[in-house]
Length: 279
Ligand SMILES: NC(=O)c1ccc[n+]([C@@H]2O[C@H](COP(=O)([O-])OP(=O)(O)OC[C@H]3O[C@@H](n4cnc5c(N)ncnc54)[C@H](OP(=O)(O)O)[C@@H]3O)[C@@H](O)[C@H]2O)c1
Image (cartoon, rainbow, N blue to C red; front, side, top):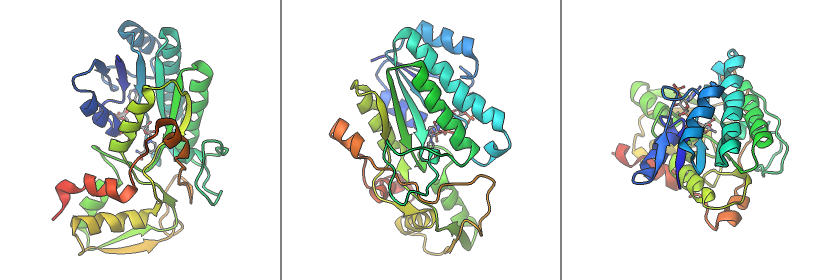
């Protein structure tokens, strides 16, 4: 399968590139292809004629997006539409990566693919707009919603490890719950779903639920850094520009039934990721 990657230097992109070694693929990030440039997207995808496009590129700065609304929509919505239109023209399958932030977090249980989105933040709204525009532009679309992603790049785990070295005490939010997810499991799901024709929307997260505080606690437990004092705080105490869902775990039953495979439990995946950092 000939694969075209966007966002290849991002966390997911780097993991995918590792997996795709030895296969036919073209890796692009903003330097090679700015996805907001409709003509460039059409030309580059048209010339490569991929069997599938894995669209990992996005503007992922959740807090900054509250101010840079046009930029968030331009990349996450219009950029995604550009990719989807190019996929339709050359008949390529498309994978779009979306987020648990399309939900408002008030349901009180894990979200299925059939629950109604109601994004709270500009980032969440722009990603949901990307979902809808892609769906309108092309039929051969897999929308994979993931959450709390960590891999090779800036992420919560690396931030905690860094702050844990620098500070004696860390305050971490304890009233937002979700599914910490490794790019290893997400990349595996992307490549598996592409082998099928089961187009549609799927939740793809590591199983289990945690708060950010529980996630941080597990990071320090697994790395053996017990010196840093972790203090649970509320969202109200830890004010951020973008509103976030309070409870946005995602249910992965559909993915498991579609593939006969499911992502690992979140702390097992985390332990694996932290191997190089363990004391
Ligand atoms: N990270 C999370 O916690 C999380 C959670 C749920 C869903 N997701 C979604 O999962 C996907 C992968 O996330 P990730 O963490 O791997 O993202 P990431 O590390 O931020 O990577 C995204 C890549 O896209 C690039 N990009 C930005 N604007 C672009 C443009 N106009 N044209 C081409 N490339 C552009 C970025 O470049 P710059 O770095 O130069 O901007 C970056 O290399 C994204 O769709 C994201 O929305 C992420």
